[in-house]
Length: 92
View 1 (cartoon, rainbow, N blue to C red):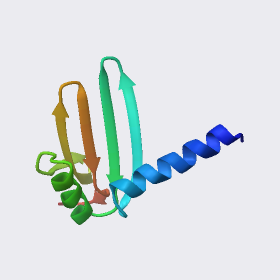
View 2: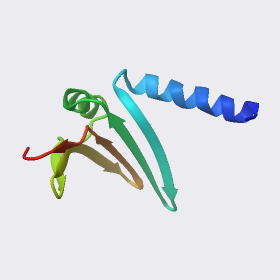
View 3: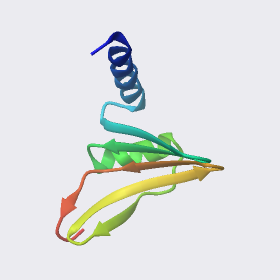
View 4: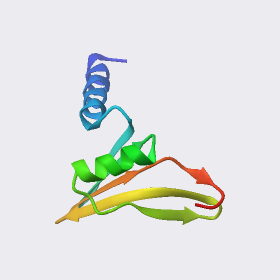
């Protein structure tokens, strides 16, 4: 592994720290002309706090089969930010 890869790791850790202590994942996808940012957090409380901090729409429950989670998102032009809490199994 070279220095460029190590620098990227330091940069990404810094971005997660800037989001908050309960942020666990951060991804950026560019599908021209759109930019999607996804942030994963450890708890529903952290999701609510992040939604307020980033001025995202109120969290709602998403479901795929027996798995469910809460998600908050917002769009500004061609930027979409999605924050998601942990997965649960069973009924919400």
